[in-house]
Length: 78
Image (cartoon, rainbow, N blue to C red; front, side):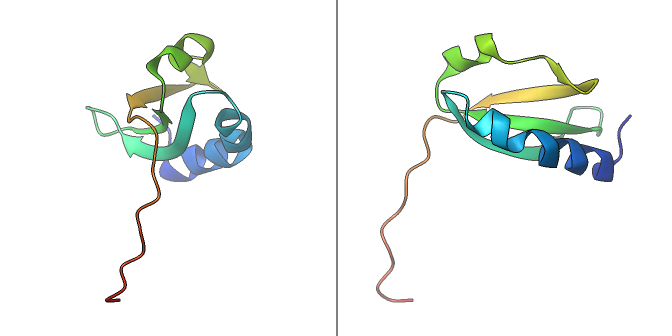
């Protein structure tokens, strides 16, 4: 089981490469069903998963289909 710090370091080392992959829209850290820290990769395109690893540096990766992220309009009342 990885510590939060270990997963943060893995994220730091691999985020740029993952975000440059077509269909990847975000990289974060989450907990799995057992409460373990995992790298979470958000996918705009679920087909992108076919080109991505199940593990990075021996740590499992959780893939989440979120669709593309969109910028929201500014709130003029802020």
